[in-house]
Image 1 (cartoon, one colour):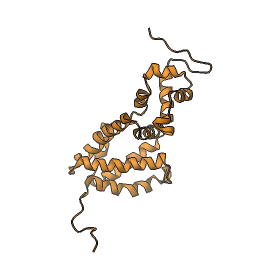
Image 2: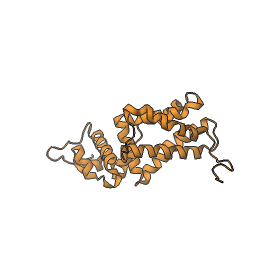
Image 3: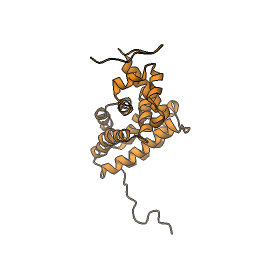
Image 4: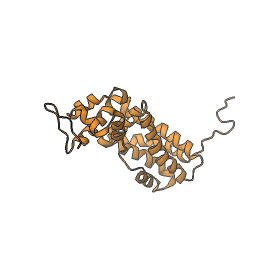
Length: 209
């Protein structure tokens, strides 16, 4: 029979809701501090549990990261939604959907934690490549009958991940909820070009005199 670590004074014991409480605390820590500066002790302190309970439920910091940064959406459902509409407005739907995800507090915390972690942890970077680039962005470009869907997906991913990094981590003064339409108007034409435009510069363009 498995044994649980005894909770210290004022600490939550193992039981109903403890695992979810740890995950919530871990998401907040990973989002605020990144992978390297987040510690098991720090997560335990924020969750109000003994650190041993984290190893009991998750086994390691890496496994805690993997579960704390699970995507807040289903890639297949997202892809279906993005393909459902005129080809020429797909870039706008994609940009608006990303902004929508970032405006929901829980989703924003998860995505910020995932992107922070991806800079230092191979497992998080792999999750972005697999779940977002390969399961959403590449099939999205392919579903629009665009040539070189992998290249298009990479360009879109770099642009959108950079936008999330600038907005949520670097905290550049980009429009937030009230200015969402402005941000979508500014970004979506670029995303549309990546999705369906000509990616190759024609000879003579931009060559100068």
